[in-house]
Every structure is written in structure tokens, then in C-alpha cells.
Amino acid sequence: MRTPKPIVLAIAAAFVLGGLVAAAAVGWSRRAPSGGDAAHPIWTEVGWPFLLDQWGKGKAWRCSAADCGAEVNVYVRAKIGFCNCSTGVSDDIELDRISDFELFADRMTPLAPGREISVAWMKGRSRQFAIAGAAPAHSALSVGFNDRCDAIIATAIVDRDKPAAFEQAVIAFLNSRPVMRWAEVALGL
Image 1 (tube, rainbow, N blue to C red):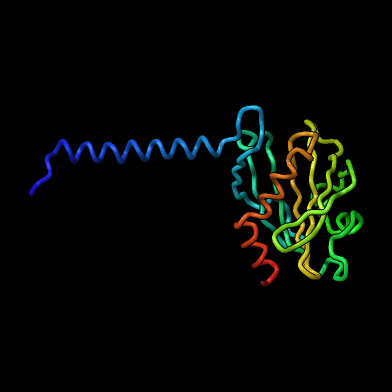
Image 2: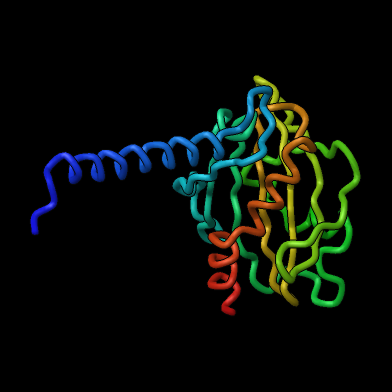
């Protein structure tokens, strides 16, 4: 028995309409609310923009101003065997020592003492920095965490002068599955 053509068209139209409604709902839910709150940041992998050095290439991601309230670029790489094996990244001196300041011409000035953070099973620290000479104002977060003697360092460059407002979103992103998959490979786990 053949299904009448109007019923087939109605069913097809319902599927198309349902798909459009679902796509719009996903798009709206992933956008930051007006006012710049990064409730649901969308991170996009971008190419590593720095020259090769002793630590090799890392991974880079960007969250646009429309999705995070300000443009945020996160640069992450592993430093195998470079962490204090007995204490890990437990103080600002160790965080500063393993940070990637040289990628940014060493123009970082601390804005406040660092604080303890956790990324997956690893412990570490996060600290806010101003970037000297940046116009318009830019700031940074340096986040370091370790697995035994191996460290992972993340530098988030924010196109605003108050990086603390973006710390939670950056830490949440570092805990995300794409970053953790990369970290497991980079650490040889």
C-alpha cells in the first residue's frame, strides 16, 4: 500500500522543521549572553603561531569575543622532565620558572599572587599577568600543572586588562576532553 503524497510531504516537512528548531536551539545555547558573560565559550583549534624552540610545538585554541565576551587565545604545551618532581607546580616561583613568557617577549608583569588549581588528576597554579606595552590593553593567565616530573603550561592571552574574569572559563577548557586527550599523548600516558 502506498502512502499518500501529502502525508509523506508533511512528515518530511516536520523533520526539516524539527532539525531547524534543534539547530537554532544549539546555536543560541552556545552563544554568550549579551553583556559578555562567557557562559558557554566555543573554542576553536588554530595553528601554533610561534617559532620552534626547545619545547617544540604546542596546541593553540581561540574563543572569539562573541563567544567569550573578549577574544581569548590559549597556548598549551608539555615540558617533559622540567617540573620540580617533589613539589610539582606548588608556588609562584615554580609557575614563573616553567611559564612560556619568552613566547611573549618576556613582557609579563604579575597582577596578583597565584592560586592553586586542579586540571583533571593534576594539581598546579594559575596567575594573572599584565602584558607591558600591549595596545589595546591585553592581559594573560599563566596556568601550570604537572604529572610527576612533567609539566603542562598554558598561557591564555585575553584582549582585556582583567584576566581574572576569564580564569574559570580557561580552567574549564583545560579540563575538556580535547585538551585532556592531547595532554595524555604529550605526557605519554
